[in-house]
Image (cartoon, rainbow, N blue to C red; front, side, top):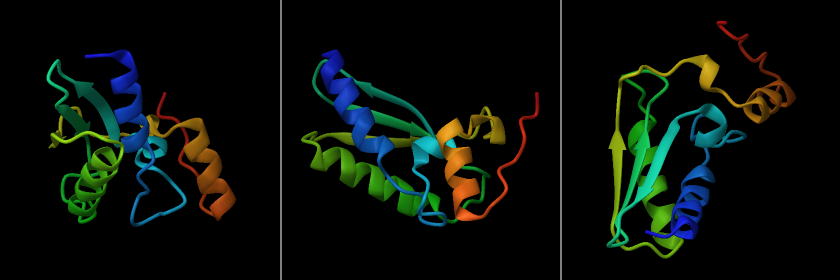
Length: 111
């Protein structure tokens, strides 16, 4: 695995827009948790839904797989994890700014 491969795969996954709030990427939301590329070039993208019954997750997972494949990776797996549970603390500062610009008051930090 090359670090450039991880960076390229992560950038592709991070660019995926949330289908419910398309001004935010899944990276802005903190839904994108991890991207790994093994020695054979297989990519595993880990995502955590904003809540366990999130109806947008299937679309997000499909979009992530498509985006990473479009970046040149053939073998892509999107893994959904529920623990730890998503929290608004995972919203990036950029995500908070985008929400505010969109007219939605971003949640405050729990800490």
